[in-house]
Image (cartoon, rainbow, N blue to C red):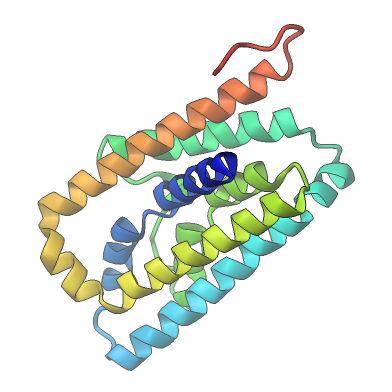
Length: 208
């Protein structure tokens, strides 16, 4: 039971850092802040439903994708670790990663792009979901989907109350939160790299 709680907390912190609901709330406010509350609710709902569908698809099909493209779990962990670390590094330095760009295409539905992809369901989020569910165990997939659903709910609430959230935090609070999430992401990315590299060595590293 303790292992399950540890797994839930680890997955939650991983998704919390990579999705960064507070920082993405600022992006949402910039993209949809001028719209009515009802329109904001519709945009937030559509964006998070699309995000949830994308992540669930990769969580369920992760193992099949591995077999289809001949991808190994260590390769995913190493690549995912690099992606997650890069995003965390940029956030830690107070700047956005190109992988998390929030620039809006002129002809795009903002709920799908850039909100759902790449802000919420970007490469880092997908890699994180596949890494945590790569074993193919039903329990791991259930944990990933359940935790991600909770994060989607938290993000939805942040979005629809974006003006209040941003007023409460202020610019300084937002910067602190972004850098803190960046530090967590960088550590998670490093851990993914260590696990991935260790599994390729003749004698696995002792990583506790």
